[in-house]
Image (cartoon, rainbow, N blue to C red; front, side, top):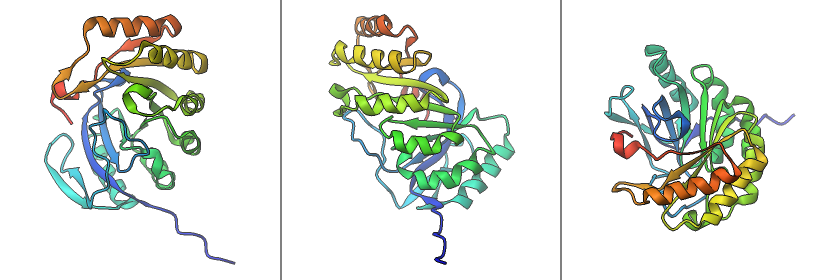
Length: 252
């Protein structure tokens, strides 16, 4: 009988830190963030590093903003030790464990190994670009919250309507919300298409319109934001406008 394959237990990570969630309906909650390397998209507005690095930076204590290094790839045991320390030391501090990126769903074999252990410590909050429905399906039993993007073609450079529809059809089995980043140049027809997609696929789910936020602030006018919401609400009443707040708060 052939030997069983060794399970994948290591992942390439960018950073591990504790901070305030700065987007969407869970804005303001404290989370433990694990940022994964690699992404299958290259959105024009993205300012998040996701290229693999030799070492993952790790906060020395939750919220300390002081970092040490952990050699990549990072092992299951290293993550478990960190969770025992951080969650055991402050059991009520974090709302959930955010898996962010990059795109975490590119490392499904590792997550299948890690998630049962992670969920013993905190609820799991997946931040995803919403383009990989097959990968999501295998992880659904271990997820609690899903922050799903719909990528508008004019701002992201990708047209993924079919992938997003299939993804949301699966994600709605969990607590999910949909985030749409839009800019000054976004055609209102794309806002309409996104709102119709959510209304038709998961009418009970919140749609968050997020004005594109850069280090210099939000370039959209009040009128542009109100008009985008007016168009979306026509098709999906559960639509809110919530900006990205990391830069304003000065947090990671």
